[in-house]
Length: 225
Length: 392
Image (cartoon, rainbow over all chains, first blue to last red; front, side, top):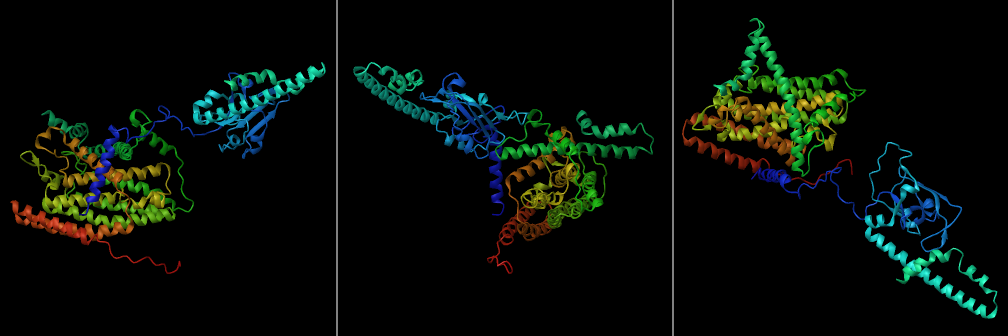
């Protein structure tokens, strides 16, 4: 009969009205500043720089290769390469950024910098509460503000971070094995040379790269374990 | 004694103020006091209703309503009012300035004038007019004029479309509103709203003699509710201001406080129509059960009006907007025939005399009419595939 549908509809809205007071399933609103839900693992806002260990400057993975700067579609990354070098994660001496600025007012969160980084140094952050009353300085993040520890990365993107760590460990192990092989070869060569001529020791450090041994030691043991 | 005292407290207050004045000034000051009370109480109720609507609708849609301004969002109307007052008042360059300015004023004046005849409690009406019902409908018709003034003077196609829709809708449903109110006049024999309430304010046992508890009264009540929803341009009959179609309809070109005035006008009209419906069918200020008469009559009146408003909100949260042709079909092919037949049934009721026979006869006739008209009137005609003469 005419009007039945209206009664049904009225009952439905009445159920919703009453239900919203008793059932949390019906009233799913999260009242943001007071309550908040954890960001989804795949969430991304702006990039940040990952560092290993506790010292942000010493442990920074970025080697200032400037690929991200070149690939960035809105050109919001500004990098100055250092003149000197320091050893990176696998022990190779690398440059580091003396300046690494991201203008987050320009950044469009495309994640291309993350995609192109060969050193797993730049990742997407989930921190989004960045409102500031200084729209120029306040939104231009320098390397100190961008640097965050690997533990933080593990916290916000666990799956991805584990994957990255495994890959880095493999690379380190490979590098260590290679270095070990090279060292052994060099040692054999030295030993061979020693038997031949006593002047060989001068060439041995030159083949094994000057800065490598001290930094390369821990990865060797880590790779072995 | 004290119950009767609280019942008449506002009347006694007016009398007390008047007692300080010379005889010549007494009626004038009495009317001014009453008018001031109406102009203060209804906007306050308006603020309350807006908040209730936003929170209620929110709950029906499974969300909180506004809950940031003050405890539970209670001061939201204050914030809205300040916002409306401080907004820029934009008048379109091509608008007819005078008419554009007058439209919101006219709508507010008319809705407040209509309230003058409503008995809001025992002895609590501003004017006891012999033809109060007629006066109320006359004021209601003037609202249509204000709406058309707004739509026409804005020189905006959306405004004009909204105004056209409003006129088409209000003219159609005004008829149903009048015809469903007419049966009450037939039975009570008076156009005075005060007399209509008094006719209902008696009890058999503890149950009241409200007109809604008779077959013809129930039918008239249902159609009065439908028509009053359409008259106040509320969902599902909110075509004149259909936001998703024509921006805001006739008040698209209004901003700031003029917009707020339209908003106020609309809600106070809602209160007016709800008050009239309460007066006609729900016993006005009379208590629903005889022993509840100790509670002051004006509380009952405003309680009933608020309930009516709640029902409007409930309807708004439930029904989608009609299409223009559905709106017209519903008015002319279903509502009008049923209300017309209801008038005959009321006459039958009037002349069959006391007894159970008239209950059975009237109920049967109305049920059959409702069922048949529901099938015949609301039947979908055969619709051929739409052809476009020029577009293809």
